[in-house]
Length: 241
Image 1 (cartoon, rainbow, N blue to C red):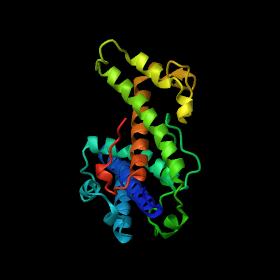
Image 2 (cartoon, rainbow, N blue to C red):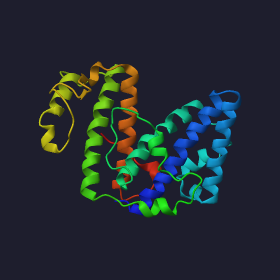
Image 3 (cartoon, helix red, strand yellow):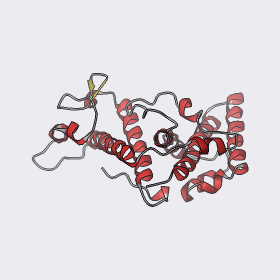
Image 4 (cartoon, rainbow, N blue to C red):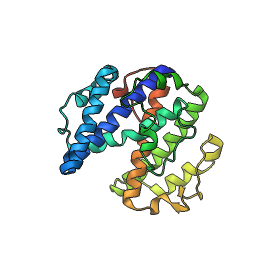
C-alpha cells in the first residue's frame, strides 16, 4: 500500500501530465491567439515542474514525454494522456481531497479536479492537506473499479467482434457477473441483464459514450491498483480484470 505522501506526489505528477496534454492539444489544434494561449499555459507548467522539482517525481515514461519540446506531442499521446484526468480524480479521492468518487459514467468538468492541483504554487499546502483513506475503503473502491472496467472491456471486445468462448455469449457472461453482485460489496444500478446508466443499459448506449466510460473505468482502476500496490513504479502498474 502506498503512503499518503507517495499518493499526493503521484497526484501532482498525474495532474502535470494531464494538463500538459491539454496544452499540447491547444498548441497543435487551435489557431492564432488561442494556440499561443495554450503555449504560454504549457510553458507555465514546465516552469512550475522545474521550480518545485515535480519533474523529479515523474516516472520514466512520463519524464520522456515531459522533456519533449512544447507542441511536439503526437495526437495519440495527447489523447491517451488527456484521460489521466480520471486517474487524477481517483488519486485525489484516495487522499481525501475529493469527498466522493466522481461518476464512472460521465467525464464531468475536468477543472473541478485540476483546480485542486497547486499549479504555479508551492506544493507544501497540498501535501499537508492529504490524508490517505483506510486500506479497506480504498480496496473496496478498487473492487468496484475492477468490475466496472471489466464490464466496459467486455463491451469493447464485443464491438470489436472478438468471439466469446464456445457455447457462451457476452450477454450471458454479464448476467452471471451481475448475479449476487451486491454481496460482493459492489454498488451499481442494474436490471439483472446489464448495468443501468441513467436508466439505460450499457449495451444500448452510443459508441462514443461507451468509449468514454471505458477510458474512465480503466484510468480509475489503474490509479487504485497503484495506490494498493507495494511497488512504486507507476509505469509497471497493470489493470487486470
